[in-house]
Structures are given as C-alpha cells and as structure tokens.
Image (cartoon, rainbow, N blue to C red; front, side, top):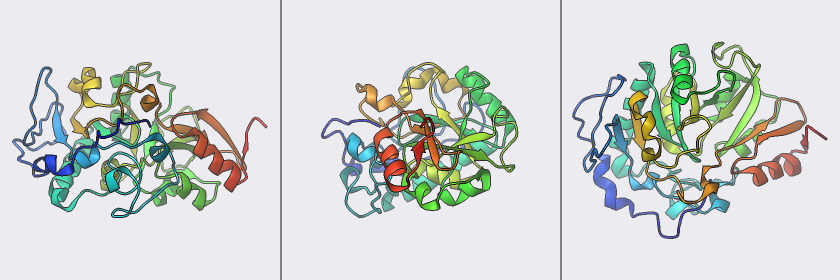
Length: 312
C-alpha cells in the first residue's frame, strides 16, 4: 500500500515494554472498555484503548515489496521490513519477547467481537473495523458506524486459505488462491450457504480478504466464524493510516488495536486499499477496484493461469 520514508522503521527494542501488559480493567467487549498499556497516554478525545502494538507492527516497506501478493519469506528469512519476514508492515510473527502481550491483545479483541462489538485493527493496507460476520446485529452496527449505503457489500476476513472453502464456492485452482493470499487483494467469489444470510443479502457473491498482517490473521483464527471487515473511516472519506485519523469513530468502537502508522501518511498511494478482483466466472476475471496491487495481481491471473478480462 505505499511508501515509507527511509529510516522510519524504529528499533523494535525501543518499544519492547509495550508487550508486557498491565491491564487496569479486563475488556469484556463493552462499548468504551479501556485497556491501558505501559507508556500509553490518553490525550484529547477519550477512546477505548486496547493495545499499542510493538514497533515490529509499525514498520513499513517500499511499494514494490508491500504490494506483491505472491511474495513470501518465512519469518527469520530475508526480505520484508527490517528482516521481519514477509513483505509489509508487521507481517512477521511477533518476536518472542512480546508473545505474552500479543496473545492477550488477541484474546481481548476476540472477546470484544464475541460480545457483538466493533474492533479497529491494522491490516496490510489501511486501518479496518471488524465484527463477526455471522452476527447480524454487529453487521448492522458497522453500517451505522460508517454511514454506509446498505447495498454496498462488506468483505469477509479469514486467517487462512483453507477456511475460504467453507464460505465460498471456489472455481479457481488452490494454487491461484495461495499466490494472491495472504496479501493486499480482495477476491470476489460465489458465497456458500454457510455464510450469514443477513450479510450482503442482495448478492450471491462475497469478497474475501486474508490480509498479510499477523495480528488480524491471528484474530480471525481465534474466532469461530469469519470477520466482516471494512475500512476505518466514514463512507466516502479517505482511508486511514493511523488510529488518530479515525477519532470520530472512537466512541462507537469497543476496542482499538494501535499498530502505529501503516504507511507514509503524506502519500495518497498509501490509502488505495486492497485490489478487488471478481473471480466468480470461470476462466475470467474482472477488476472491481484497482487498489494497491493491481499490476502484480493481473500478471499472476493472466500470465500464470491464463485468465482473461471479463470484458474481452
């Protein structure tokens, strides 16, 4: 999703203390629950603080690294931001010294979601707001939060490609899915009967996201069903790269996961969001939104798998 100025990735050790939580009050998913962390200060407008993520989640990379959906390096290998693994901000597993705080943050966020709450989370593109896709009341809350047109669909978010088959009818090779996911791409497929009928009831299709970001993937794995995911902004307004940019939404959120800046806030390219591609017609594809990974996505679809644009 965009460029970070050289040298903007801080040394992860500088924020290691944030990984050992001192929870002043457990979050039970109630509106306005606060979860404070060492070094976290509340300034200005009150917000439901959850987790100030370690610096490993705040790192950013150059567009060529971050936008390639098929590029993967296992944690501990080369590539990615500051050797963190797969390209993108915070896409490696959490360092050993912060796993305790990581698990507690995932647990708190999952608890808020199970209680019907809305949770703000960092992704591999922009900040998002998630709820349980199978919870009809929570889905309505997301539309209310964003002032969103009721006929504009929500995507679902999963932790792993394997879970996609339960909620979608897949008509492309499994290898194609794994070439694009996890990554900054939304794949539109035929929905299955397993998906909540109150989620996008006006269409037989559903968009699927598996972000290349370890926190939201762990959160999705911790929930029994898919997440509904949308960008953390009022509809028609710009996407957000820091938690302060969506402060108007704070009062309606149960929890905020602060992963630091996701990209260069001065760069419009950083706010493009995921590339949305419709794969519901066998042998063809259609670009619904160009997003931040258009070129590598089209190259994979056409050159490796021989798919053709639907208009041709």
